[in-house]
Image (cartoon, rainbow, N blue to C red; front, side):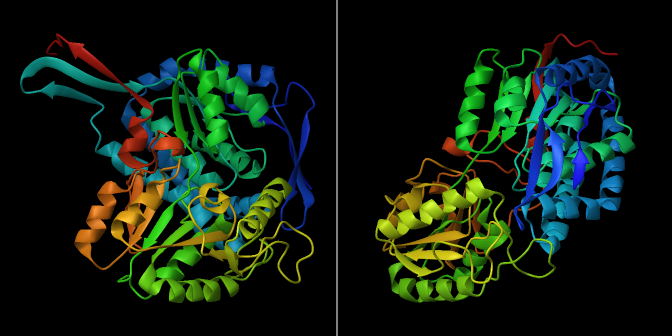
Length: 479
């Protein structure tokens, strides 16, 4: 068993202020794989104090030098990518091949995109030709609390740390206690890269403890949080007393709208996208809306595809999905599958219980429901497991109404070969992102939502701007 008890504060590894051990569980085996310590108020205060003390110097560091340190970090990240993949596979259940490519690879991708965006960004610029003595200066928000989830650990750590570092913020990272090992490795990488003491600090803890302490801390200027809508609401309320900036990337219940003229691979593509990362993605296309002329065939195809999705240990190589992260999530998913059955949706494959041959581990059967409607729990709640809900529709207008009838607004998907219709849908779907015909968003595209999916944008230029304040200066003197 791995024992990683220390925190990284003010450029050094320090022991926690109190003994508060937490066992990290390997979801493939249900056995403990590591022991960490959860921080107390004294640990949070020490990390915030270190970040506050380091802020003036880091803000004054030329942005070119901050970018250069992130470029150095990228090289270290590449050298340790296998360590990161092994950690994530062990602690949160990503199959090792997927952990190497998608989970670990995402961090490298985001850091490189931040460097590219920052080199083209004018942190100090004139207001315009009409105002020769006015300047616009972009400066760091200040001390940033970064609270990250367990489902895409390095994806979220790098989206926050990379942007904050280049923007000139100092930071305290609190990773999910369910997946802390990769973040500890990342702290080792930040140390090796040579970031000044206090710029980056790591304190392990849970949401009730360190998370709440950071959200309410008077010396924290900004909270950047990725996780559940419930937790995002609590953070917003806690942060309101100090009027700190709050950046939220929350849940989703994306609609994948499949029109009758969709390409022949659209349904298969949608099912596999839903099952990726065992359905533990906030932008998963969890509601498949299918136009009625092709609905019956789509249900048949979806059932066939889901039924051959294999499930197995995260430590085994191969193209399969792993377990969900823990017992709490497993029970929640089981309850929602049973609700779908009880509410009258047609179960076409999967169901409750573990897959055949897997009696231990938090494994879920890849599940598809058909003949659902948008009032059912399985169509409204974020299940966060490998469960797809299929709903028929007749007209484009009906599809838009169903897709938008959700408190969430993260990602929607459109499948049609009619370009004009695709563009119309992109304009009227109420979500921060729309992807069409299997085409992913490009490098530097902002990730984020609206409504109860949050208010932040991560990645590229927009990700940098979220960690920057805009300062307007009048009467700028020529130098």
